[in-house]
Length: 282
Ligand code: PAF
Image 1 (cartoon, helix red, strand yellow):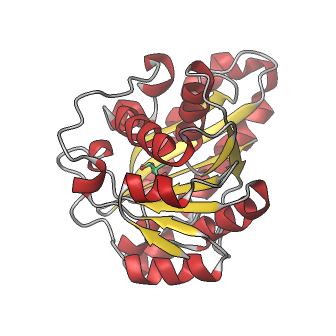
Image 2: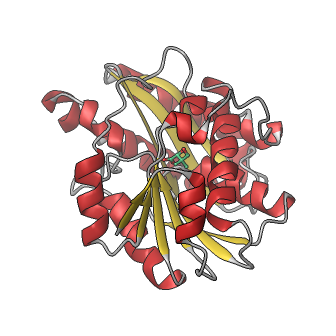
């Protein structure tokens, strides 16, 4: 596996690749990332992963500085998983000057849910992903990029970005990997104390219970939605969480569901100082 830090070196390494498969990450890789890498393996002639903790997608009070950076261990895991090229730029490599041109996603999709609680987050994500796509795929007739379904809204925003900019890139979703108790794997799980880790499964349990209540409501769901979400949130808060949102949405639009819509339940909540997100299609 080649480890590469700059865009020109990356382009040179991929000069003969016709259709790279690409897994962008912020590192501190867990089994969810490695499942993405294994899923990516047959989808291109060269398998590229990136590790870059992207300052643009963190608010000033968030965990940019403390985000775990474990490049050596991550590189070993990627090598063992069959990755061909690891692109690990420094901030200076990726943002040699302030990134003043940015990708502004559709506010209907990006200013709700995560975007409501992390303003600017999806602008930061879209901007870095567009730049990473340019580094990996420029000049290629076709490519594939993989993202985890745990970041459900991110996946939808990026799909829309690729569609609206007519990028020749297939976006492939990978199912959320979970620990034995049901907690969605996340790099931020490493922030949890032992007691918090034992409690953390309550988020996915809350999503499941809200999803069941939403399905049971049937055609009355639009009228009952606010009450169901409020009750779910009150219960999670009563268990010691600070809930940002627990929401039942249309899988197609991420707006409040209309009768007949396929549903997804999404949530974000803080346990101690750790903010976790999760979702379930129901
Ligand atoms: O999901 C992530 O890890 C990040 O948001 C991504 C897509 C690598 C962009 O920094």
